[in-house]
Length: 253
Ligand code: ATP
Image (cartoon, protein in one colour):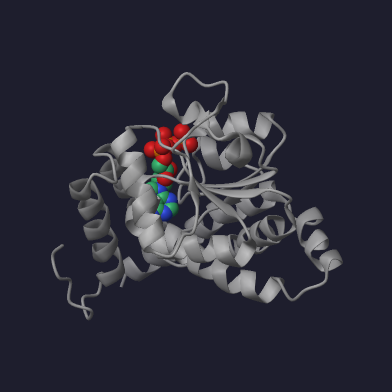
């Protein structure tokens, strides 16, 4: 990995790029993962590279849903494993969620490497190696474990593809996504769409997990029942517009 100086104005973004590239070299991330990262980065620019008010609103509801779930599962793909293996493990710990590897470009080697990566970051058990159930999809993301994603009532699917998100929602699950693109099919289909950078979202959600675990059940239920995903998505688009207007005003001087 190229050493990025900490005082570089684009330190976080360059570091993330290096991590995904290193993930490809290690065989954890697919080459297509580089394109997904690039698309995410461009939306992050438009958002102003910050966790917006609407993102925090969605993150709070998402953490409440994970804490209250009977069988919460966090789905991990190659980009997530390269960017934030420590953070997904920490979020699983704080919310009591299981971890399951699920890949579009699935190979047994890649599944094994991702499981090892998560275990090296403190995970005790990681599902995904022995899929014994299938979603009604024609690609490899259909392969799931019956005690994991298949039977989950709440699933966090960061950096998801629209197809599987739609399928999981159709199955009656509460589907939480993290996707910087508020216009993606994934964001439009999910139950709780978090429009934020993966690493920022996970940091926020770990902190919220510690805080919300101390709350009464009724308070958590209220956070979920009063949550309005259409409002959150529409606000995310408005936040992009506001940021662009501010940038346009700045460019005039
Ligand atoms: P869809 O099928 O949902 O319309 P897509 O074809 O763009 O979307 P993918 O390429 O599978 O779907 O998903 C990648 C998505 O993840 C992109 O929308 C991208 O914006 C988002 N993304 C990539 N990297 C990050 C990141 N680090 N944090 C948050 N979102 C990210």
